Image 1 (spheres, helix red, strand yellow):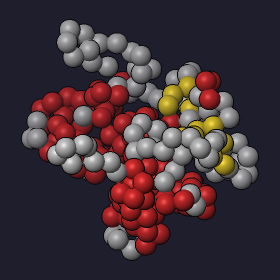
Image 2 (tube, helix red, strand yellow):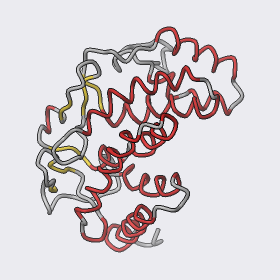
Image 3 (spheres, one colour):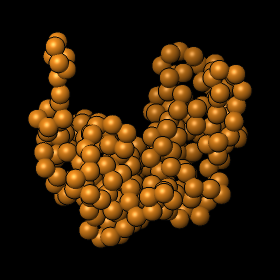
Length: 239
């Protein structure tokens, strides 16, 4: 990965080229084809996801899997699809919990999955609800329905929890068949741990051609709940 100030690099993200892969689509639509194909060659010749370590399910899905799939979608180069399938097969095992809500981390080599060591019994709603776009698209281009089914099941489980005003407490016990919020009095926000879940309600609805009404209904309820319960105006100017 790139250290932007010094221009040097490091491998704290397990050497899977996260910065490079996450930037592929930007290179393409900015017309930087020389740099794009240089990066493509690195992906083809050097990128391996067979790492003996746990990675963040959420971050690796949206940055690495999403980066590879968007590069494939723009360029049509099957190098990216082949790497995406390999990574998707490793990440999808995170959904194999009793509740259907994904574990926060997955071991890229063994496929074992777990929640983060500091929060062993729970995951957060951003992890559960911010992988559907990627796995649904992977299912579409491969014909392998399992990718979409497992990701969509997580969304259905979240929907069934039916929180008041569509506002979700961030942390959820996900190891039991019937998941529950950690504390009904916990803080609710649209910040870290929750934010992208609300985005994906709308994005999944758009991805499906605006035909899957349940996702739009979830989004509308949550945004209305935000305006009713979370919106505050400053004193004086009322901003």
